[in-house]
Length: 261
Image 1: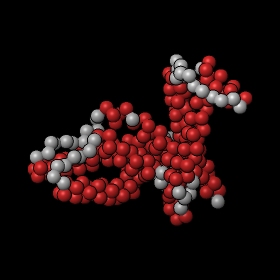
Image 2 (image 1 turned 120 degrees about the vertical axis):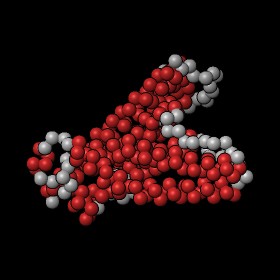
Image 3 (image 1 turned 90 degrees about the horizontal axis):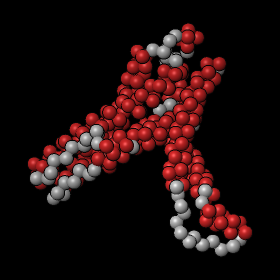
Image 4 (image 1 turned 30 degrees about the vertical axis):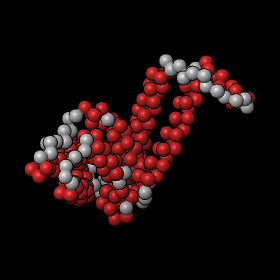
């Protein structure tokens, strides 16, 4: 990318075209999966005596997994040979490219996928009603459970994007492995913290260190419960923020290195 492009102000118009290009790249796999899911539902509907469309949470989980998977491949072109050159020559800044990925997988994809889920549930539920007199059920993206868990989805999308920027191959799997290990370590530290904040917990640790038998006489007092919840939320927020900044730094570094070459 030319130096003068870096010096231009942030452009919403360029951002729009970048998001549009991402949508055009991803729309085929999205529609293929949606068509396969619709076919499975119709097959089940035709072979069953009564159709059960599932729950809002189940449909939302499928949408979320799809978004995380797509985000895990969000910067695959950047690592590719020919596609990497095309990526580098895009007339947009690094920040615009990174923001386009965030907008695509945090906003555009969920809205598009929710619309598809709405249409599929309408088709399946309508046919089920005509064939089996099943109750009508339509996927409602404005249900509370979806909004309550949106931040969890956003957290994993940001991690997946950072992994895609970091790893050339198997980015999602490698990111998941690192994250699971990190969460196990964090869980261990939280449990240790809970024990240290409780009088009997400290006695348990002391006995364990001395090699004595350990017996828990009562549940640990957790005024600590609210403290642990706060610590858990801080951990998720801090990890998400770190992944957000780290992912951008990786994309910027990759572009700078490729420009020199």
